[in-house]
Image (cartoon, rainbow, N blue to C red):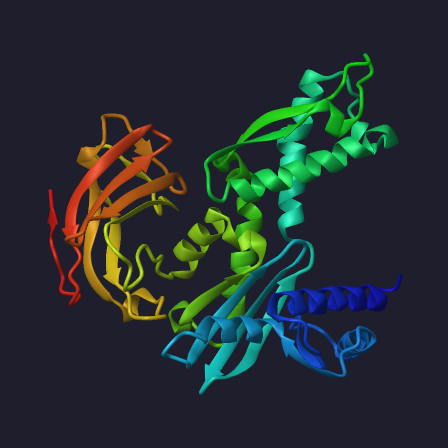
Length: 375
């Protein structure tokens, strides 16, 4: 099967799903999204695939434009500059999209061909699963090249992917598969199974360099296009791996966008926990502080300088236990809650030193007036 034939089969399946969801009716045409980097030959091949799938009328739309248009579809403000951060299974693409009066244009785009979720799956396989297998079973160092263990590798990769996904919403997970699912034995004849724990912190350590590489490309794209970080109205995240907390943490801290806790109109009370990372070294008695600024965010505006500051939570160095050190990049978990009266309460958890600090209540004014933190 050629790539065009495979694409035609995918389009046929999507059309069938659309009919099932919306009713059995004739579909004559469709809008097909394509990467911003597609050349003329690739665009023509996509058109031929759509025609082979039975679509008579086809329009091609660049994926960054589609993402930006979806992002502003329910927004009052239709104008602005968007950074589209597209982290997929095998590739990373970034684009700056400008929208004016609901018309969108790709200003610039760049990408990394070999960076995506499958790379993260392999990192889990090589850094967690492989050492566990070698420790618990009699396997050769190069067992991954042995045809007898190819099913084991496929199952392990699949389970690693499931754990990666699970760790976006929980802090620990188990990579598990029983003997019947793997169907292989080691050199001693022992049936092989998988039952190894992985934490979100471990996963973060495996992928952080690649995430930072993608963010560095975004930063370069912004600068090369004549923009500054503060000129970007919103970062649009698309692709499954972009749901990983570390992606959102690093983008928020390095590209300077706000992280939204509660959106306007949300029913109170409301609570949650979000992970960030310390922006500097911080130790007991050094006279410094860590500050979490709180803003009343204008609709669809993620630049802090364009939003109204309403206060801050601060942790001072004299609040730390003697000898405690928080290093740049250490995880900080913000446990927050807003009660029915609009009082915001927050606890800062520093997992590296196993300490949690209450920062006091803060009243979030509906008018956006600067408020105070009661200690």
